[in-house]
Structure formats: structure tokens, C-alpha cells
Image (cartoon, rainbow, N blue to C red):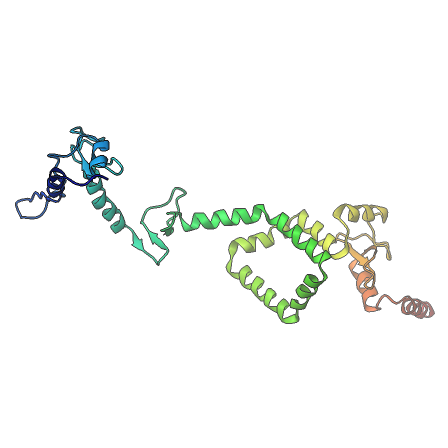
Length: 280
């Protein structure tokens, strides 16, 4: 940068002059602007002379005929006007904490929720987006967890060690509280029970059969109990071996309870049959 001449020093001195206009009450009505007299007419000349401002004599895009910054070519009057606008916008915001604020207006999706200072994003929109991402990757995440549980013995032992009776009690308590306080969760839990899906899910989880398998067994038995051969309007119970879990047939309520009371012992059942025969 060349050494400043007397002319450049005079120009810099004029740039420090603050011209203020005041209203009738004596208050400042306009923001001080930079004097344009004696400034270079081009940006290249201002950079060559080491001057902060230059003036083209033309209006900017907002109609200001003011000095411009040699560093970036921006209008100095536009910069002065942006300051009050930014302060006004900041005053309209109400700080909630160090990270969020509220504007009193809904976001693009209609949420009256706080927004973040960092990206001006609505917190409710962020929550919905995170939930959607979690649901989208839920199956892949669960598949990875199941694969690790099957192949990693150390991880499997760690998970099983956590499942103490106290752990099960805490999980049940949390589910009961959520069921009582969250209407959406309660409806989600009750909806399957009202239809066919819950029956199919119950058969799968308890006996390892589907509703189609159940219908085939019922047709093979003629729609009647496998022991008493009586047909009932009620749904027949699935009888299974409590030791192996193998399904044996479909029984009515009384026959199913009778086997359970006699503990599925064939000898006890035979003794009961002989006992009854003596009194016939």
C-alpha cells in the first residue's frame, strides 16, 4: 500500500465527520453518514489509495446516494439502516433460555413452540423430524440388535444380567403409567385387541401358530372339542404341552381346565375314569 499523501489524509479526516440531523425536540432523527466529497470514484482507486470509502455518485439498489465500502462495495447507508431493523427484530423475540426464544407467531407448520437461536428451527418440528427418522430406521436398528444378541455372547450375557425381577417391575410400572396418562398410547394398545390382528398376534406369541393354523385345526375337529366332542358358541382353547410347548388340539373351557387341574397326568386321568366306571 503506498504511503498516504496529504490529500488522502484530508479525505480520511473528512470521513470521520459525523453529520447528524435532529427533529424539533432535539433528538437524532437520522443516522450519521459518511461525507462523499473528495472520495475516489471507483473501488479500485480507493483500494489503491488505502481509503476506506469511495463514492460513485449513483444511487444504490435502495435509492441511497451515499459512500460505499472499498472492502466489499456495500452501501454505508444500507448498513446504517440494517442496525435498527435487527434491533427491532431482536426486541420482538423473548428469550426462553440460552438456546431458545419465542416469537409469538406460529411456524410454517403452525406450531406455537420455541425456536432455536442457532438455526431458528421450531422445537416441535425438530421433535417430529427426529421421531420420523427413528421410525424410518427402526427395523434396521432392531435387526442389528437381534443379530448382535445372537452372535455376541458377551453382549447377550450383559443384556440378560439387566433383566432382573426389579427391572421387569420397573418396565411394567412405566408401561402402566404411560397407559394411564398417554391417550394415544392407550389407543394404540387397545386397537389391536378389537380385531383380528390381536388374535393372530396372541396365537403367535403364546403357541407359535397363526390364525390360519387355528382355523385348519378347528375344521379338522369338526368345530367341536377334541375330548367331549361338544360344540360351543365360545372360542375353543388351544391345548398345549406345558413342558415342550407343542400344541395338541383345541378344547372347550371345561375340558381344558380339567386337564390343567389334573396336571396333564395320564395316570391320574385313567384312575379318574376307572373311579367313575365303578359308580355307573
